Image (cartoon, rainbow, N blue to C red; front, side, top):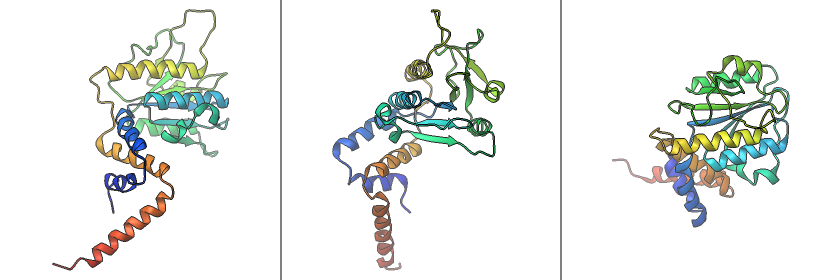
Length: 234
């Protein structure tokens, strides 16, 4: 069985030079040190704007909870950004999807960061960067559920200096992710993907780009098996 790096090299022959250059430039800027959690977002333009912002800033994973509201994207807003991110959806009607998401993230070592106007909360400029962070955003009207608020490791607020009580959710996500990612890139924290994850990411992009990638991979495997059978025994 070919490794991810070997398989990517095989498929890369069917990708344009420009696209390969983009993969080589963009993949090393991706991170899983920061991830985004969206709980019951119901307005497609907000959901889509967050995906687009995350992709542009290098955040690879987005976790989507659908307890009450179906998560819908608007292609006129995403502009294809959803193709290049990994979306993890929690929508099992038999369980608390918020709890399932929290459990999965904590098992991977993420700090659960709940966005909240609490006065004692960190801001995007002050939150510690040492541990992987999952920034959690709730529904447009009521915010995060009690499940998230009760199990958050810490809280995050965005400073406000006007009369209005809150930012739009897509704006909140943009402020948080931009500030934190700029701080990470200027820090000594190891925020980039390790080599094995980098190979897997480029392979996943290649599979989304190459027409009939699955059939090509089957052909590569068949040719490798035939080559192995043709080799004489020592």
